Length: 227
Image: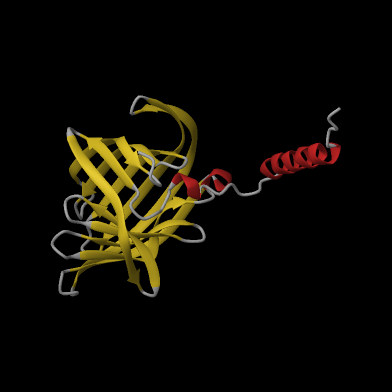
């Protein structure tokens, strides 16, 4: 007769109970798996009839911090890193060699947004030409909100996602301003699978000068050697 290991069963039951209680009483849920950062991870998005390839390709040190290079197929790249509180953007580099830096680094994806519901922060940015000379600067007010969970059909697959809404207000030193609002869906062990973005620009008087809407959806992905 097989003897049932009651101690093992009780241990497992206790662990599950404690995990449930931890969630109920507000232990922070870490969402780092929703933004996987490993070398050679690749995402292919379709947007307005165009295809964009994004790949983590190498690292770059910025002010003593080792960052991942998020490489775009048209020659530009972003330097991002998983910090203690979330994924942050340290520098954006254009294909012509000009770049933009943020202080503190711009929050992209808070690790504990589900429990905190809303993340708000203020940062400054400085734009440089390829020679490293300052061209212009400004400030950003960032608000990131957790908007629930949804199941989407992506690449003919049912994928459970969390929904994040990010609003960024941009005030440039020359008096112009802008607003960017992005609704994005992230899946565990995949990353961002869909986004809806509205960008509005204003002149010094507050008059709208430009509005742009963009929709992107994940077409294929390569994460940790699974395609």
